[in-house]
Length: 273
Ligand SMILES: C[S@@+](CC[C@H](N)C(=O)[O-])C[C@H]1O[C@@H](n2cnc3c(N)ncnc32)[C@H](O)[C@@H]1O
Image (cartoon, rainbow, N blue to C red; front, top):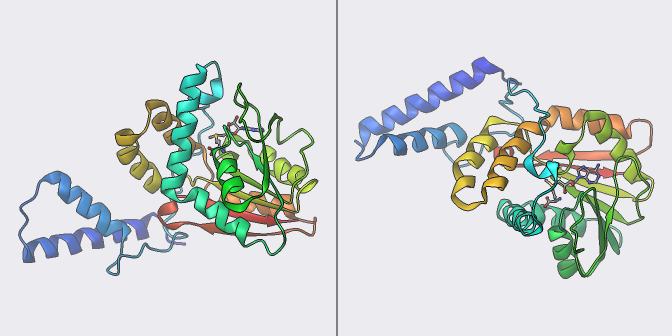
């Protein structure tokens, strides 16, 4: 795996490529555009494809355990609802909901009942119900006070309490809320009542942090921007994530597949028990 030196060489080459191209085509541009060009040159190769996601991990970004604003509770219900709607919209734009739906459709067996672990206000479940016709339900430490309407959201701790049975459990952007031992324990706990668990979370990496910091404030409520940035700092690197899932399934007869999306926008562990 390339280290700091390899990343520095990559940036130097990208920078040199940019200077050469500027010499050939003199710019009518500002500094801001040059920065955007440099970022593009660093992230993309000539074909416009992103470099291997498993390369260039940032080993210097320490995991943060500071809580997010919404973890504190006590917000007005309207403000909470707005934040969850914006979070669901963000998942749509980033393709997170679509990635879960794709995984559910590629199950190989009938998916009659889907359980969302840490479902928030149930935005994903609503979509799964509508698009797949499955029975859906969610669990969360802080379910919406007024309920989700068309399906149940149970107030449960997914790490420590018995969960309702389902064919497949899913989880989106919840795992970074857990300490490592809790993450391992939750995977085992879900395996007691479900045959498969699709876990999607953020990746702790400077690229998604930089992209989210640039774009988030243009279109999201402030609480989503602050919590979103903190979520990325709290998330696992792909190596950490993979190692914890491996620990959870070791000796159980289960198996998993781990994938990382381009630009480190998400990672998914697909666990079969
Ligand atoms: C960032 S929100 C994500 C909500 C939703 N999955 C989404 O992506 O829109 C994380 C959610 O996980 C819930 N959560 C955290 N720890 C939990 C636990 N141990 N058991 C159940 N839910 C938990 C929080 O209450 C919160 O609603």
